[in-house]
Length: 302
Image (cartoon, rainbow, N blue to C red; front, side, top):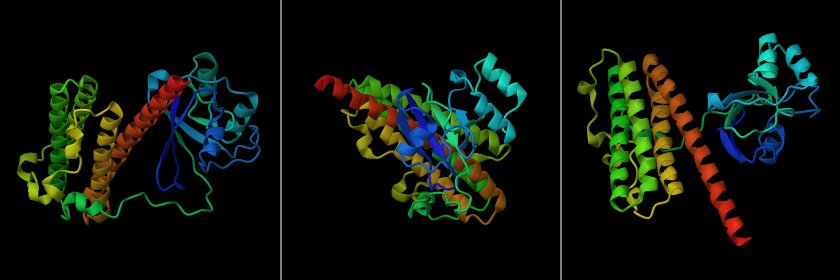
């Protein structure tokens, strides 16, 4: 079983799909079945048109399918594989960074598949909802002091919010979802530590935005009131978290798009990338959870 996230400039947003290892064949087969526009021609490992970059979300869970001679030769001709990478794949079971999608089989691991796509098509703009600007309270952030002050507030509130939800779930005996929220609170504290590290000597306490700066007096990653529902499932908890992470992503994306200070825009762009990774991970978890629930119901009805 594997979560495969596809990313390309020709796609407006990344797409994560859930595939059963070995059952769905190659990366190209999975892509075609989900209408992911990976270019291809021969589908036999000879033309190189389906070249992709494969990254592993868990670096300790890498496993390589033996490279065929055709794939090795094509990758060498494209300058996308070294002698050391070939040796590592054959001897140490460490896959090379680039593969041919028609030759790379899905394994029991979560991966990110990146590809250029059809270069005759214009690159798609990063997906941003029409209300993205509201997530930063309509404020134009043009100093790094302000930016890091806002970012620290976002992450601190997210951690406190998840702590409160975990306590609420513990209080009604829903330990599974309480455990999930505690884990998410720890993640938010790690993000807060990263903000403080990047802020360096900036005094974050002098740039804390007031509650009225935010829509509904709540920071972007704060969750809705229904998130404390005592009957919430793990899947529901993941969807709550995804909602907050998407708002966090668009908060930083809006700053990147509107700030007149290039340093602020550059800092926001880094956070956009990190939030996008958080969204990918949660989407992958949700896809896996939905598949597990659906599969369980199928067995019950059998």
